[in-house]
Amino acid sequence: MNTISRRRGIELDIALLFFMVLMVVTTIFVSLGPNSFFFDLLCFLVTLLLIVITYFVNVVSGLIFDLLFIFAQLIYVIYQYVYQNQFNYGMIYWLMIPTLFCLTIHFITLKLRIIEKENLELRRSTTQANALDVDTQLRTLNMFDDDFLVLSKAATQYHIPLNIMVIRIRYWEGLKSMMTVEQIQELVFAVSQTITDYYKADNFKYIIDHSTPTWGVLTFIEASELKITRSTIKENFNNTVRVSQNLANLNLELVISTAEFTDEMTSSTDLLADGIRELQYDV
Image (cartoon, rainbow, N blue to C red):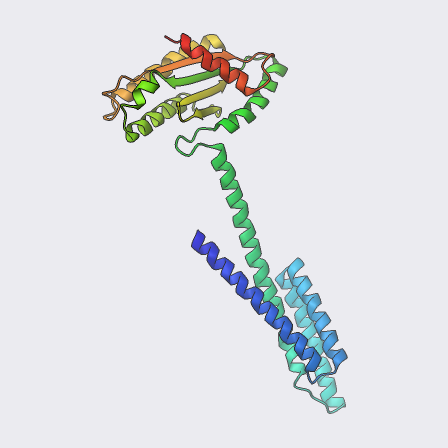
């Protein structure tokens, strides 16, 4: 992708340079050419008009007007030759140069639009990357803050419960010193996958912290129902660990808590703090 973008940048630079060369050559020709100054000036102004049409409309319109301009010049050349017995080879210049200007500005416009489209796609990709964690493909803490604002307003307006489920690994501080990097990565992925598999239709799943792996789920499910969910997630996680060659020899267990949003909470931090505080009661 970088190579293609670099090549397009070089092509655009060459096209711009060629356009500048055409402008310089045309300016010199108008000043020193064999045609009358007013004829060259008129043709130059018409050429500028064709450039504007090609840039702001499209190349087809530009070339159509260019053909009309060429046709008008041919009529003028024939008139000069037949009725006044005059012919100036300098007039041939204006039969070719407007077309070159139109094609060059079209090429520049085309490359600019392609680069603009690539930049837009890059911004979208960056936004998506900031929204989703690279390793787990779960939503990030920044998205947790944004989602909380929307969901808490909905919960207040429609009088429905908004709960958070906070998930951590029991005895993490002691476990991480005994685990390899590969085991830690697989463990984080296993927990994330367990949450994703259970909440397939729920987009509000988060990886909140990596240093002390912490997951969160915002849901409108009643707190009483979340007790069943908590047991199911723990069981599913245990089944995943049991069949893993890297994790089966470790004493791994999830600790899960729930907390409910109240009107006194002014930010996502308040709800998250309640959820983390409740972890100590999951024994």
